[in-house]
Structures are given as structure tokens and as C-alpha cells.
Amino acid sequence: MLLDERPLDVEEPGWIYEIKFDGWRLMARFGDGKCELRTRQGANATGWFPEVVQALATVEGGPYVTDGEGCVLDEMGRSDFDRFQDRARRRRWYEGADPVVYCVFDLLIDQGEDITQLPLIERKARLAKLLEVPRPSVLFVNHFDNEEHDIHSIVRDAVVPFELEGLVAKRKNSVYQPGIRSSDWVKVKRRNAIPAQRFKRGPKSKDISIGL
Image 1 (cartoon, helix red, strand yellow):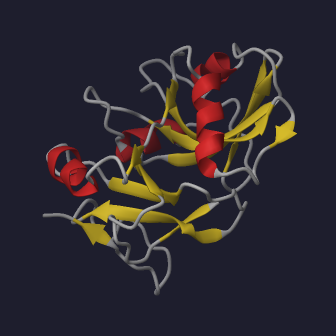
Image 2 (cartoon, helix red, strand yellow):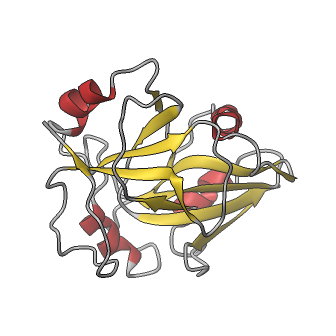
Image 3 (spheres, helix red, strand yellow):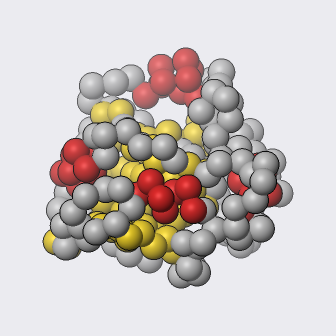
């Protein structure tokens, strides 16, 4: 499921917000001591990030399928895209490699049950329970409910001073639509978060940003 880029009122009810991590989308299928990683384009990345595979293989039960972002995190927990690219382009572990962390934000298959048509907020609750035991190289991506938190304050006090890329807004009741660029998931970038030339997604790509 892909992110839309459009104007969004952060005070509109019914949305949750996640910190946006900057890396590569990775789907993981794991359970019964096994784990397989796939990129957004379908490439088998299982051998590229063995630290993630080893961590997910310790999760009991299954099968599970999750969606998330493979990242390299700095000492403050911020994703560093350039360091991730340096690691990922070698397609393997090597001496001195930056460790990759799988930042998981959605659960699609739970103990063999397809839950993609359940509301997002329920899928996130199941994911939180699944990953309640901390594991190295795996990070559960929590969220802020905009009916309980002031999103403007989060931007002012966290996104801007820590120079994070931005937030991802998601409708709480949205279902998971594979391959669809849905208006239910919206990328909200911090103003001037990344150079305009870094990502070229076509001539109609839009830059929806937030800031003070």
C-alpha cells in the first residue's frame, strides 16, 4: 500500500500519525523459525539483512506477514538514508556494516489469517502484541492519535528540532490495499526535509510539507 501526497488538515478527526522512517519498504514473512524478506519490487532480500531475519525468526507461531521500512538509525534513533543505501547496495552483511533495523508498522497476516480488511487500528494493536517482547533489529512503529495529541506540537517539538523527514497520516479505519496509492495514507513531509532532487517520482510528483 503506497502513500499519497495531498493537502491534509491534521486536525481532521479519524487519523493517526506515525514518524516517517527513511529507507526501503520491506515485507517480511516469518514464523516457525523462518523468515523471508522482500522489497517493494519483489526482490528477495533475505540474505541482504541477516540481522533482521535472525530476529524475526525467533517470533513464535505464525505464519505472519508484516509491512515496514528497512533503515539504518543514528545514535538518536533517526533514519539515515545515505548510510542505509551504502549498506543495502552490497546486498550482504560485511565487516563494519551499519546494522539495519526493520521498522514495522503493519500486520497483514496473523497466525495464517488474512487481516488486511480489518481496520488499521486493529491491525496495529495485533502487531503491538506480537512485538511486545523487544528484539534487536526490529522496531515497532507506534502512532499518535490526533484526537488525543496535538499534531502541530509534535511537529514543533520533535519533527522540526530533530530534523525528521516528516510524518505519515493514516485513517484509523483504513483497510490494507496492496499496490494502491491510497488517499487513506498520506505522506506529510517536514518543509525542506530533503533536497528536492533526491527523489524523482515523475513530473507530477507533489511536495506536501509542514512546518512552522
